[in-house]
Image (tube, rainbow, N blue to C red; front, side, top):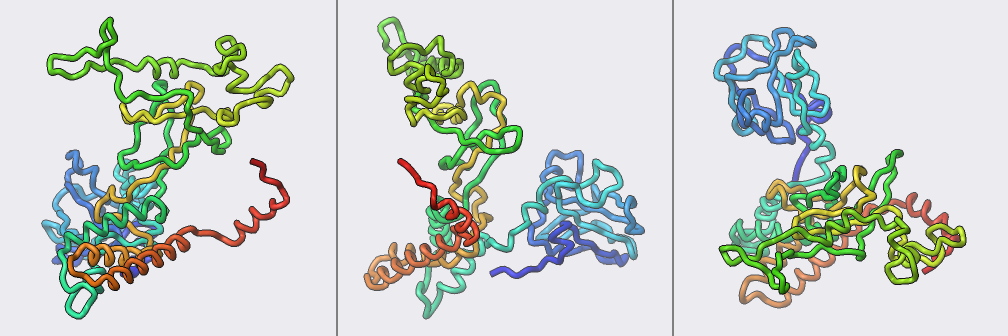
Amino acid sequence: MSLIKENNRQYYEGAQSFRGDGSLTSFKTTFNTDIKWYSSDPNSAKYANNNFKLYTSATGLPGDWTEVVSGYSVSDNTIVFDIAPALNSFIVVQLKTKNGGNYGSNFNDRAFGRAVEDNYGSYSFVKLNDIVNNFIVAYVGDGKLITSVNRTDIVFHAKRAVQEFSYDTFNSVKSQELTIPNSLSVVIPQDYVNYVNIYWIDNQGVKHIIMPTKLTSNPSETPLQDGSGVPIQDQNGNNIETKSITEERWKENDLKDRKDYIGNSEFSWDYYYGDNSYGNGQVYGLDPQHANINGYFTINHRDGVFSFSSDLVDKIIILEYISDGLSTDLNTVIPKMAEEAMYAYISHAIIASKINQPEYIVNRLKKEKSAKLRNAKIRLSNLKLNEIVQVMRGKSKWIKH
């Protein structure tokens, strides 16, 4: 379990100050965020990976702060100087923040980054590593549910719990703001598991949902063929790949260009967008599955990208997707309202995987796991009475299917 150890200045400003006494060389920071130090040399490429900057001043007044760029190291969140700072000198550790912090005489010396903002709201979460440590303390040992178990086993089942919970229990939806380039494709995020929704953003900042389409598809292989239609191989015996004609045609299409879609065939304008002859625009007789003016997307697993229709080029989009929650390994954060469900899942998984365990214990733990998971889902659903009331005010409107 975690307790608040930061003061207000540390939490909001991301800064912690110390005073030199002429002899002390080490200063222990107490941020919730661990200090990440790779180099004290700003000329090193690793320097940019530090999540903080260090400043000193003789007066402590604004504009009198100098960035420390040598003569110190960091170990276990402790700043260690090679030479003790002068008596009564001021020392400040500034975590990187979006506005750069309040220190540094020059603009370029300020600590720009996101370490402070990433810490906001962190009290509502607990790290996966703490879950593992807490489980060992509370559940493993003589006279406890589990007499002995390897830590690696607990870590494995804890990670599996995070993966399973991330899909339908945790608020694990991530989102990226992207611009659709001329290639009409954006790369699938590194920690992507499945998409939730994709929207394009208008000039007012309003979301418009982009729908997946069955009008086209992305082939998983595009082999080059000879005159008989047989795929051609290279010198290593592998099929030679070529560009997808389907994707090239989809990229260049304009489904609303009526001169290419006329008549009564199933590929006509009328089939996809409705009969326009009665002045009803794209309404009369349209196929509902294609009733969308916001564009389309497909998932191209061959190239690992989302592909979009040509009318979305240069649009700003929001890509919402689900991750399995393990992209940061044991630093993954777990909502505290699901912490008990995590312990129940791990307990059942460990006992169920052991031989010669009484079935009544396994079944009891299984029921306990299900009950606590249900509680976690209810807690994390975050339903608010006033929001429900606002929605129900439209109860007099019929929903037609």
